[in-house]
Length: 383
Length: 172
Image (cartoon, rainbow over all chains, first blue to last red):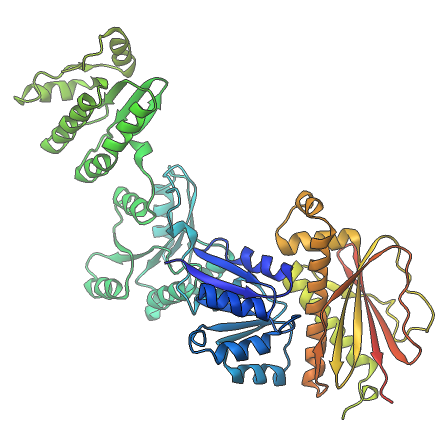
C-alpha cells in the first residue's frame, strides 16, 4: 500500500517543498490550499498523515483541525502542524486540540521527513519497483572498523569494483557519514568496544533515510555469541574474519539486489556471449541459472540468432557445471539459437572422460567460434 | 497590556536579525549579515534607497502589537532564492513566470515575520500573522503614516542586499 500525505497550505511554495522533500520516498503527496479543501480531500482520500498550516484564507488550520478531530471517521488521522505560527501560547493552544507533532517554519526538509517517518513506514523509492542497480554502477559502502588492516583488506579486495569503500573508526564518524550522504551498505565490526556496533545498528535503523540500508556484521568466526546477537537484532548478513573477498563481494551484490548478469552475459555485435569464470562454483552456477532463460530470450527477442558459450577460463569441469551447460544448450535449441563452445585443453580432456560430454566440440577462441557460426547452417552447432 | 514603547530598539534589531538569519540559513543555506548602514529610526517621508527591479514581500502581525514587515529583495536574488527553494532551474522559473517567484518570496517573508513575531509572542506580545502579499517594480517608495514607528534593517546575503522595513502602530 502506498502511503498518502496530505499537505494543506495556501502557499504553493510550501506544497512544492513538501513534494520535493518526499520525492525519493514511496508515497503520494496530495495537496489542498485551505481548510475547506483540506477537509474535503481528507474525507475523500483518507491520507495517512496531514501536514497542516495555520494561517490560510477561507478556513484556517485551527478550524480545520478542530473539525477534523470532531469527525468520527477522520479524527484518527495523525496531524503535523507545519506553520510559521510559533510562540509558546499558540503551540500549546493548538496542541491541546490534538496534533502528533508541531514544526515551526523555517524548516529543514530532512527534519520533516524524519518526523513523518516516525508516523508512517516511509520506504525509499529504490525499495520499490525501480530498475535494479547493476554491478557496473557506483555504490557507497561504509566500513566501521577500528582495525585499519581490515578496512585496507576490504578496499584492496574490492578495488576492481566501482564501489567506493569508506573506512571510519568510530560510531560518531559513522553517524556523521550517514547524515552527510546515504551509504548503500554499511559493515560494522562487532568487536567495537561497549557494544557500539549494536548501538550504531539501532541508530541506523531508526533513521528514515537508512532504515532499509543493508548492514553487515564483521566478526571473528569463533565469536558465536556476537554472531547470535547480531542475527537476533536483524543484521542483514555476517562476514567472518579472515574475510573471503569473493564471498564478501557476492554477499554485497545480493544484499544490494544488484543485477550481476553482466558478469556472465553480454552482446558482441550480432552474437550473444555467455561467459563462465575461472571458479565456477555452485554459487556462480545458481547466479547464472537465475538469468539464463531471460537473457537468452531477450537476445532472441532483440533479433540475435547466434550464441557463443565461452568456457576458456574455467579450470575444472564438474557435474554442477555440466548440468548448467546442458541447460544452456537446451535453452539455445528451444529458442533456435545456433551456438558454439569455446574451451581450453584441460576442459577438452575432461570432457572426454564423461559419456554425456565426450561429443562436445570446442573452439580455441571466440573469434573461431564466431566464424564457424557465420559459416554454418541454421542448425545448432558444437554438439 | 504591554505596549510597544517597552521594547527597545536593540530588542527589535536582535529579533529581526535572528529571524532573517534563521530563514536565510535554513531555507537558502546562506548567511545573512546585518549591515552597518542600518537605520534605527527612519525619517517619515524619506524613501528607502534601493536601486533596480525589486520584489517586496509583506506580512503583517496583529494582536497586542500591530505592524507589518516589508522584505525587499532585488529581482535577481528573488529568482535565485525561489529556484533554490523550489529546486527549479532558471529556465524553469522563467517559463513558470513571476507568479512562482512571488509565491516563494511571499513564503520567505511569511517565515521571516513568523520567526520575528514568535519571539515577540514569547515576550508577552501575543499576535497573529496576516496572509502575505507581494509588490513588484522599480523606483517606488512605501511610506507609512506619521504615527507609525519605522525601523529599517539592511542585510548582506552573499553579494545581495536584503532590506527589512519594519512598521509598527504606536498605541494611543
